[in-house]
Image (tube, rainbow, N blue to C red):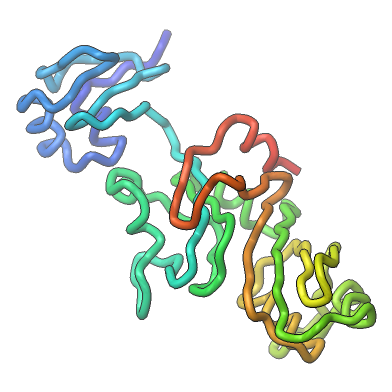
Length: 237
């Protein structure tokens, strides 16, 4: 039997405020369900394929939220920022209200693909080194990168405050100063520290791929979209 909930609780679970606030929205005739106006907060609906609008904006009921964002520069991956806007300001308030979190952080000046979810198990699978979900970064360096530098990164470099060497899984040269580097870990400032260890410096850093999921070319900096079933499959080992 399909699971059902009253409309007031449905909206509250989807991040539209307290149950009292959701009740007021419904009574004020600001909510339609599957295309029909509903002013009864206690009306029950099946959750499967449930679509509704709030104040004219269309939504779909989701037990959990899974989405990607093209993180722009000069934004922090934190709710409590210090010097720059938070990436959460780029999301609709209901998603923030329901506790969505970024999966691994990108530095303030780093751009590219970042995933967000409110599903704790999913967050752990993507972020934990035990699950070996590789991340690919496009790295623009200040100085040209020699073949010896590439071999050093693949063999492993010693970082300050790390006991063991850290190695790239794979490296593809794009130009004499741009490479695409695949990593399994997500240590603090890892790419920048690895490049510094070979005597170079990162001028621009962009994450372009997580697992087999690539940053869509049509997703502009600051934009986000829901993950599709194909996207989720691309994140599996």
